[in-house]
Image (cartoon, rainbow, N blue to C red):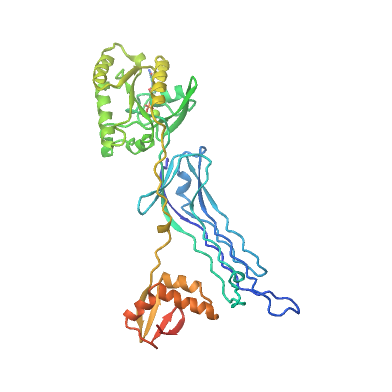
Length: 420
Ligand SMILES: Nc1nc2c(ncn2[C@@H]2O[C@H](COP(=O)(O)OP(=O)(O)OP(=O)(O)O)[C@@H](O)[C@H]2O)c(=O)[nH]1
Ligand SMILES: [Mg+2]
């Protein structure tokens, strides 16, 4: 089964905590603070590879969490950094924020690692907080938290030329003739079940060709299976519309052409792409009437028609010449615009105040975050705690909730007297 869309969870590592420690040595009294810093949390890194062609591997592994940084230790020793996680994806994978749909990364180039979530920084150990007036800082900083995100991986193949057409018209056969790709070819509909890419080199020019499953009339309404795959030719520079000009299946090639154009129109994003039409299976044609009818129609629309036989390769060289000269004039495929706004990835911190008998309880992620930074056995740290409560609006909220001087405020498993 071909998988080209998956949702996964990623999480970068937390930074390690800074350490509170004092230098201890025999006969040396009151050594200075020597608590080391926490290590940095691991990053979540993506890299595009040409060896992968689907997102199949992600069907079984959906959670990727980088390692946390280790805590600092005494003797000014910094904790080890957490290991990064390198996630390999096929080239052309677009990574979106699952919630907003915003494009975070377009994995356009192979082998270029790209960081999506940075690991949290390690906290400073108490060695950093010594000042002239505070020689024995009894606190250190906790590590910064990592980031967590649900992302949608979507493969959108990157190619120069996209092959479209009804099933069984010879798209894959043509791919096998002009590139070294060896797709499955057979005389029935929907032989191709996933996109195949191949590189076509002609004279000094080379370009990537994408072959996708055939589409049928009504594809935009869910008939057949090709419609979803049109995504894989969305980022091509031009299309090659392959028609079975012999009408070998008893269909009318002109009607086939119109039907496919209708589906491309319905898809939207493909309708303005430059296009050449290849009238394939010419070797099976008893007469030229189909070819002439199609030619008349296309002349009207200003679209070039090239008669070929993928089976005998007649006309293929002419086709390649035309494709190359057209491609050379078309702009290169560009990566999608990324909007990697890092801020919103950190969970919104909030708090709430509830009554607990006569006391007021403060709970929620914001207060938990503040508590992480406090050493309740240290006066400096307590002052910092009080300032944080004020700065974050918790004091104001308590007062609004009715708390007055001397009332009891419960935070975590501690009780405080409310003071302004
Ligand atoms: N006689 C003749 N047969 C051809 C030609 N091109 C392809 N065929 C045959 O047509 C059949 C379908 O070819 P494919 O290349 O699998 O067709 P496709 O368009 O990729 O089909 P789907 O993957 O099902 O959409 C095969 O039996 C091919 O051998 C041609 O130029 N002449
Ligand atoms: Mg095919």
